[in-house]
Image 1 (cartoon, rainbow, N blue to C red):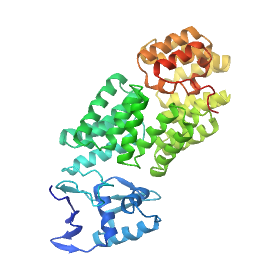
Image 2: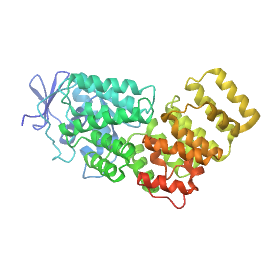
Image 3: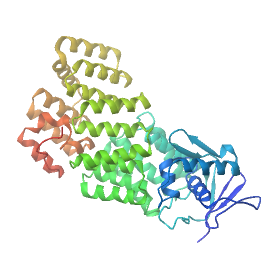
Length: 439
């Protein structure tokens, strides 16, 4: 197997030889400083959290974060102050463009193998850009993520991270309803399987495949196995911890679900997506004050985050604060580009007829299309039209609407829960009724 060697800024890093050099002159580094450099170079251009670095470089020892600053300072003396960027309170990023020569060899004995870099630095930069956009969970950013991953694949079709990233982006397109979910999940599955064919240990690909199994196939056991494989490959993988939490909460394991999402928060404390996922966990537990708090944290990080606004509004509605619900809903609609005349009409109807009037207006104007079936089911359920509610719910089931994964636990389904037909729909999805929804 060819040695793993990286080149950056005139330096050469020989990983198996544990040798850093410039113009053939060796630059001595202490062993742990060298290990830290390897971890950073392998993730060049990407933020690596302090916790990740401690796990990678000191896997069998308990050491504090202060040790990192000592070794980062040593690397800056050897390579220059600008080579390592500090991300305050979070971690570090290796800044120079890196070119990889040879194949990956793990200096940590195989336990902490990080993905090798592609041969072309621009591919790595595109994948980093795509991942950054993907982690915002923003409708506005997602098209850029898809484009970045597609371009990376065009430049290097044999690099698994490009296919894995595209798979995750396609899953996000489906969940954010930017693309028909059947089409999006089909492409996601194909891309994830391509990535796993190139690298069976690719954590991103296992997460993407697990997402398809969870949101499209409703195969809860297989989804859980897939995400557990991702965590076995990378215990600190943010998206894997979030997906694990979602699978667990759908199955009613709320304590473990929240714990998994909090692990993701430890790794990525500045991600709007992580904060939103915690808000969703509290939503399914009917802890609405906590839902509002965490959704607002997500909005503080990304004021344009539409899903965070939706959960904030929904929590106010569940608390019985309909005025605040309308305020948040109108702000959400305005940010979503709804015409000003429609907003004025909604305000008028609410002032005259309250929330029931708004529901009647929405039912009159909602398009009777498969994509709107779930929303129609929920509105008919709130209005007490049970036959219509279950007719539309069946249409959503036929279309395998991904939002239905929360049928057993989501408070939005509570108006339907007392009807005998509800348990039949749960059984159709392979879900068991929860005798007492979480409080």
